[in-house]
Length: 343
Length: 223
Image (cartoon, rainbow over all chains, first blue to last red; front, side):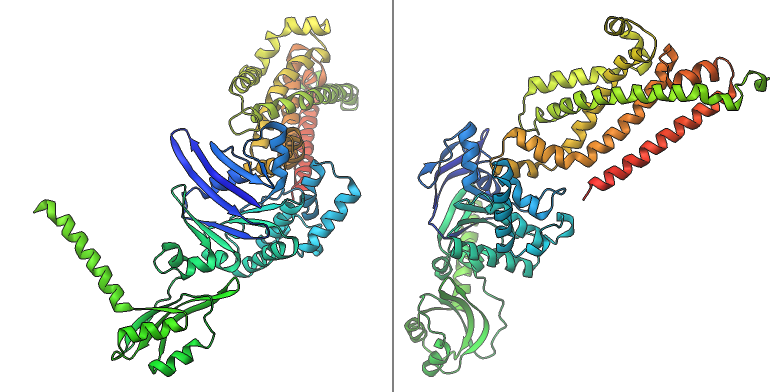
């Protein structure tokens, strides 16, 4: 496992990371998300020990790596494998030679290098491209070689720094499957730095949102998605745009429990009459389903009854109009406040 | 008149072949020194720079200054300026040995810069790969920087060899021997057009051949 605590990084007077606390258990995938400029890349460079934190600790297997220097620091870096944004393969080395590079630098004997490189190529499904140069590989293939190289020294933690940025959806999917495979088969702890919410929903067990050098929200992905009011929740599972339902009242629904039965909609229909599904996003996160929907219901239904019936099925409901009303109210308040000094 | 002064064509070889041998020897010896000294110097200049593996302002500025020194003076001036040192080292100021020192000084300085440029072209992220996998600085320089810069270094060597052929010809002006010496003493001073033409043809052919093979090598090293 990896435990980051009180991690701070300052460049001169500029505080880029401000007391990061993050811990990832063995065989878990954690994602760090955030807008550009939030400090994601600095965090990545601190975690793979390319940058020395100003203060705080990074503990892997009980050893504080941030405190090391010189030779110890160099050796400690081997415990954390890094998959870089654009794979960063050496252009003049073949796929196999690229994977072998860290092993050769460590002085692993030739037969052992060959055996391990073969294993790694097989794991990332690239045996048939072993002797290709990076220029002969696609972006996704290069990234798979990058992952194999990151794993070459058998690190307990794998850091993936925007590893799927710029890949097409199929290649992204393949990389994500590979990462989940590493977690499930090899028990590797994986820290994914990304700005892609699909990636987080697709593979992460837990998520942390970085903003202005601080973690502003974190939790298990499923829990965060079930929260109603959080920005991260809405970013992770955005509500698809819905058309107006003629003659119906619009409600927004959200899976609140991890026990929502797949058949809830038809059961709700029995109690509340016709349910018009206007927009919906339902998928699995971890072991439990998560979802957001916009539905249209008979406007004569009593608000309290709708909320109660849906709550029985683990679904939170809010009238969309009410939401809009709240937003309008807040805006009115703001306007009033702004107007006051002038008056 | 020229026909009377010119060496008969069949005899041109007798002068040209030894001269060519001297040029090749001069350039060969100098290039060995240049690669062995200029390469490490260039690597050091880059790696002590803020972008390098071991930034060190004082060392960077000092070696950078020394490397500039060797390139500041026009070759003819440099050659004349270090004649006392040449005499001290080789005991003579004429013959092809006399050209070795000034050519080496200018060549090492030139190649140091070429090496620095070639190594600078290696993306910083590749150095990070080395660092992140716990490689030593020496391993990164050898296994990543130099290896990735190899096509650029080969292009640099090509450029440098051609520059050294040119310098060896300039050195001919102070009696260093080689094709340049032949061109100056026979072709220019004695109006020996045959020798002049032969020298020009040989120099052009040599430079073209070197550039052609250099380009081939660069292409073979690029993947």
